[in-house]
Length: 154
Image: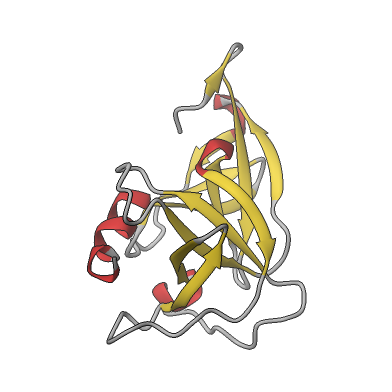
């Protein structure tokens, strides 16, 4: 996370999934919106892409991290949200990726003393690290790898 402010503090956002949560720098998330049914993909795509989600005249892939991590997905509830995340490459064909959330995210302030890497956690695809923030477990998504895996959907 590179959004370090004076005093060594980072503003982050915890994105709740059904089982666990993701942790991203606040600057990586443009907006969080209510879930609505995405449009189907044209052709084949990975099973963890739910379709194309429309936001502000942009059609982006909507990702289910539960499916990506081989976790039980269950039904999408009425509290579901979509985190609109910036891609890191600056690619104008895919400037955003949507991530399905179980409910509204939580803003957090993180210092070096508040975060620790979780040892012994099984590696997962599209995940950079497993961490604990003030005792709360979270996964740090690998947005570069996620974007690369979605490159064929442009």
